[in-house]
Length: 303
Length: 303
Image (cartoon, rainbow over all chains, first blue to last red; front, side, top):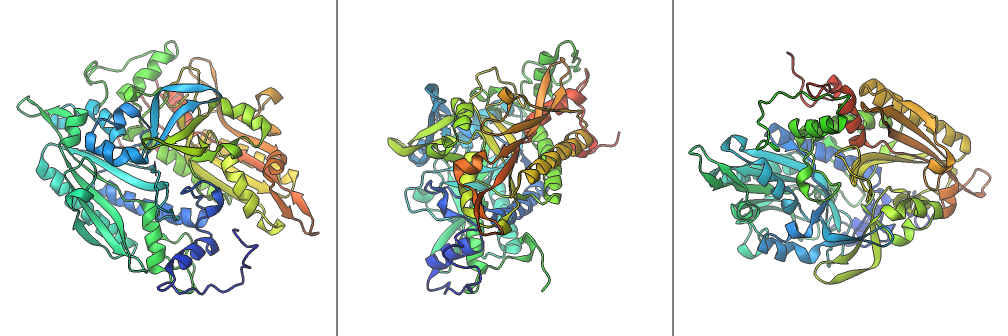
């Protein structure tokens, strides 16, 4: 559908993936109708059926694994009040520079308080967790949402790999102890292996991030990296031990079994399906074109 | 989870739905944990697992019907450049007063052109359709997306029934003739009956809207209405014969079999699942609480 005025469909795709990866990636997105970069807003890309149906299958597999492990889906608003977004100091530092802000409405209206397009949803969800978590009986609380998030990347953008709007699942969990948090982090790494490596066929290595590279506001970040065809590393899902930092900032407390009010412990985990899709086509494709793992191809064809 | 400090869970739900509907609706949302109105931004409501899992089931049934009728899923960006949003005059008049605008980025950045949070996606999708549709061989093009849309309702908002962010499917279709457009409108009405009435158990009546009440920019609108327990009418899915109005505004042309460049014909159809969910709980619930049709309940229990 796209760009067929420049390049007739019958042209045989033949680009050296290893030696000319940027060109290979751009052409595969165009020729296989995976993304159309002509939308006219930097970093925002329409996903036609071929890529979107594949990503839907990827989401379905990931959600199945999460639900088997007792994480339930929910959905929070796309917008976050500025006063909530700026409650946790390190988080502000990390995310505010990348935020898209809404203030004007209609022809000449103005919101009293600016709203952020969510760059990630801790500051949307945790004020409600503060209301929802009351007693140790409410814990663990394991929830996730599938949604778009928005970050005004200054670097050059590329479909799937680096967009200003991208598609992900974010899992937000609350526990009574730090040990349970550490166990959840291990479970997330296991989920990453199960889904990204076993189902999607993408090899990953997991590293604990250095302190300057961790999730802003968390204690520790563990991320899975993979190698792209050009030899560069790309970060795939990361999971975060938030300690009780956000619980303190957002007042997430509960009554323990001794009837004392104490802070809860938290994790979050953010597999970005659109980015994983970018890695997936790069890892599996070859000089002749696109190849998809059987499990996630939108149509199954026997040749 | 919500509001249990005011009302212990053991209190038996007993509210007269017919005579005290606003109170019944507010309480059922709270007690059955369907929506939490304490998010702090007018018209934006978190959906906890019970309502969201149910709406997911509703989406799945609707998407299955659409896909059986050859409509394919895709996904467009959440934001629309102002210059595109304002290309079709009537559409501007109808939607611009309700738009949330993004201009600021980060700490002191500004976008050159304002972006609208999509109130509906004609003006996001049709510029790309203008590139994607080339020849009569590309038609019909039948696509839909599942997404959130945003409208700054001035009226008082209510979870599900009237929100500033709501969840829907929007189907956007392109044809070579006006007759095919009329046939698609009939198909959409059939889909509405199949899904909303047969699957969800909500009786509807379909009316062609008067000219002043039609979709801004279209030729004719056909909408399904249902009666709420308080005797008020609520509009459920509507489908629109767009004629060739948007094709002219967005230059959606194709080469016909005689090699002439002509304008295409279009429809769009917008079943708002979150609103249908609001109607569904209102129609099926009773004075004692929530009742869900078997097909869409998140858990099946044998009593």
